[in-house]
Image 1 (cartoon, one colour):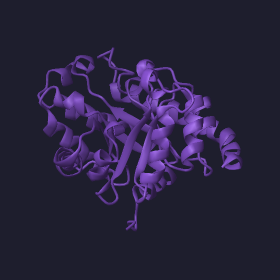
Image 2 (tube, helix red, strand yellow; image 1 turned 120 degrees about the vertical axis):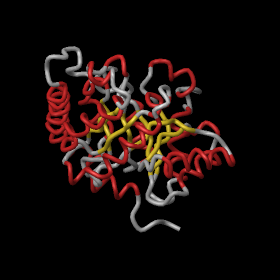
Image 3 (tube, one colour; image 1 turned 135 degrees about the vertical axis):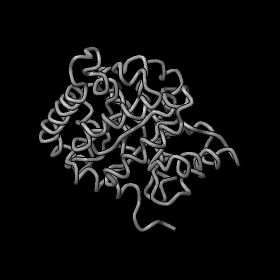
Image 4 (cartoon, one colour; image 1 turned 45 degrees about the vertical axis):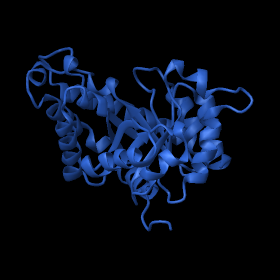
Amino acid sequence: MSVAFTFHDRLKESWSHSGSLICVGLDPDRNRLPAAFRQSPSGLRDFCCAIAEATADLVCAFKPQAAYFAAEGAEDQLASVIAFIHQRWPEIPVILDAKRSDIGATAELYAKEVFERYNADAVTINPYLGEESVRPFLSYPGRGVALLCRTSNAGSGWLQQHPPEAPLYLRVAAAAREWNRDGNLMLVAGATYPEELAQIRQAVGGMPLLVPGIGAQGGDLAQVLQAGLDGDGQGLIINASRSVLYAGTDDDSAPFEEASRDAALALWQEVNALRDVQAPAAARSQ
């Protein structure tokens, strides 16, 4: 049975409300934080909340990375960041980048961790174990699931592009379209592979795509928008992490929040300028 208000509906509201396709990734590396945060027990939480305050009006989503918190035993700080965003900006979805995957009771516990312990709105997961590993995450009405499909890292092709005549990433895309019964599935499609991104968009129609690889990894925005916009000129969650988070942290004498906001604003302006060009073409092609 489909739910009345799906995660796709939530994203559409966020895109429309914010006028943005940008997602800021919250990957707090303590070694790169301003000195005051490096030395504070709650530094990961406080830094991420400061970034959120500086950029919230420019984003359609936030994406905290679980490993940066878990490696320091700071899971409570992760939960606090998510709770802070929900309290301050309830219209902005929080996608937990956790890349969970397992089967049976273990998958159910991972889903409980993500959606009950952390109260995330969506999560990234690995579909390698098949539908039975995905289904427990899809059982939470209104919550989103982003399947790894064509990831942005340089070494991903050894599996994701195999076999050449019917690559795995297109098999994942086809499965996602079948499994998306309740309007809560997304796919991760890297900005560094725009031709594959275009194939994925063609395979899944208007399904949302979470797009890493802009900024530090060098993905081309114009190519991403040309390949990935849906017929409404939306459909993309374009993630930027390091290029926003650490735009100003090398100079402890300057307000890092201003530098991070400036970086996010520059990306927002560039995306929206390109959208005005690419959106009509996207509407014609779908």
